[in-house]
Length: 518
Image 1: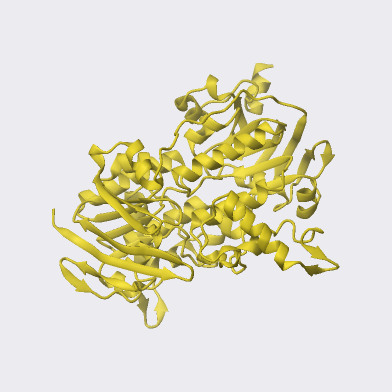
Image 2: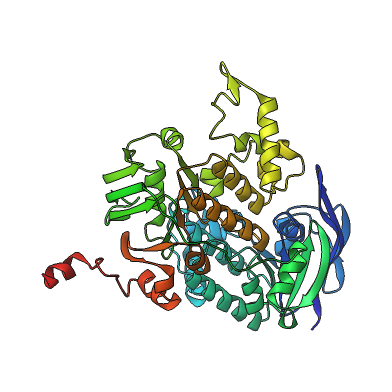
């Protein structure tokens, strides 16, 4: 196959860190080329250079054998290079359609003309199984839906070189399967794909070749078919990784979280997002909420953590009613939260890393006296967490949080929440966007918190994680709990039936079914 894109000797530095050090990679026409590496290895930086978001300090880019200059995304678009970003580049108060056509709008006599664009967007969404509502505001749709919009933006521009930066990080297992099919279909149409992912099984499923980066350096490029998962993981992190979760038998204690008949209204009129939900989490157990994205999991978590008001019901933390409590009071009472959207609810991106690490505790005597912050103590504490949780940051606690990789931003949130020794840890997609080494570490942290007596409420879209980490699984469908099962008592296929609403567990029949049974 002929080479369509080649990056030669790319070097890029930021304050305190070399993101790419003399890296070379080539993409052949009609192939899916995976880019693998730990969080902060330089993968997104390298692809951002190809898309024109950064300029290289050294090196050249060639398309079809000719040197090209890419000084911005417009140059990349002219060269038919498109990118789906890990952190979405969407305007939140614009509609889905407006975001897709932004920059390539059709106008008539100075007015935006959207009829043809709408028709084409709908056709693309149907063709590739990326169902969207063109008129929905970005601020009102789920993270998974926003990912679809990013993909459709790229397809709408008819790019021939497609960069997917962690495209499956926020998708359900079914959506991931669909996306894999979409990628194969795009290759069949003659397009070429650069695919950044941490998920080794995805590389094995769709990629032809894989280039591995470690700490900004090129480790090597391998043929995927002849390389197993263990070899890839060792190339990525420089050591052997255990892909099996070691978990002793749970020793449960008193009830930490007791939710009764909780109802939460959705953002739109109609059926509640959370409908009469009751469950409990005991000390020393991991309870996982499983389900297809958009079935009330987010609203349930928002109600538990105080981000969104509950309309009816009861939420008790160690016997204390907290349904009307402020977020800080819930935090003081021992509730920790690893949020679904790390940018919206987890971090203040314009603060540095140290400030973000004390967001939950800056007001305590450890970090302030008479209203004045003790900056030496804050930075010393930040340095301890950076070392303990392996947060890659070029300038230590002074690193701008916005400049960090997504995985290291996630590590910062996890470090902050776990280090407070919570009684209840609500962890939503805690390993999203993390590499296998980091996932291994985070899972071990969750198991450790469980072993020291914390209750863990895990919300995950990853079925492997659901089955391997949890002690009990609660399945949500259309705002209701439809099953309460143990991982050892259910298969992946049966769990999928519960998640799709095709089956309900014993005691979770619909109200009309209960009446008929009586």
